[in-house]
Image 1 (cartoon, helix red, strand yellow):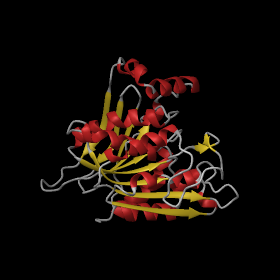
Image 2: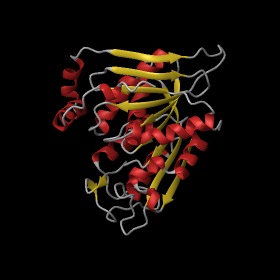
Image 3: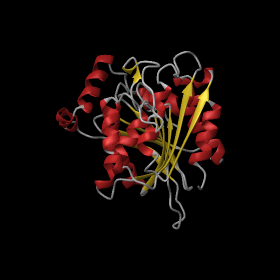
Image 4: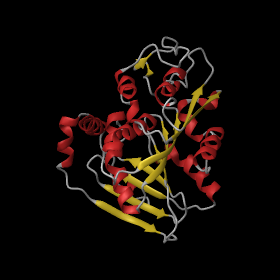
Length: 297
């Protein structure tokens, strides 16, 4: 695969922050849309059987992530499929898109999604997804997709799907989602302090930030026919966290989605390899995710 993304000069940190803020707030997003859009397509499309319905699996990273974040997960998925080919999609906040690799002719083509401006929060990631998901669905002719989201990629998928049912039919619908180390009710020392918040018997968090409250109030907009897997880490120190996300924050999504969705399951991974930035390379986590995403259940 040609490494086109590496040929692009890295922008300054200040520039990344500015663009991330512009994408976060709706009143400033129109400025991003003034930029001329460009599609660079170096990908190939394999011809599939006419009867085959394709449901791609899209890997989505979070804050300050990149291709390295989901590389091991993608590699292991390709090994399981027995096909080394996948599609790498790089998108920036100006809606420029670079396509590399191969859209395969099997039932579950793998897509690795990369955000060019990666200093972004959940609202800016949703801005990315609101554009790139319909773009990919139109280009590759799919109506459903599965997703694997790490860190902030996880709540971004949930928030995006809560808004998608009322959109045009061109917006693809989520079928399965694996949430890995997702911060749903705060990040350590950014709205969440270790061992302060807790879940009651019903799984409802005592303290809720605005993002969580928004998802809670809009949970009935989340489609019922989706299967959800939530995998979170606990390094088993006195903080009850994965060093960045508390167990309470990660588990709090159950209270929102479990009463609604087709199936909700969660797995706690413990030990040193359960650290936030290790979770996406953890073989136990990857095995659990692959068994869920690539099964026919």
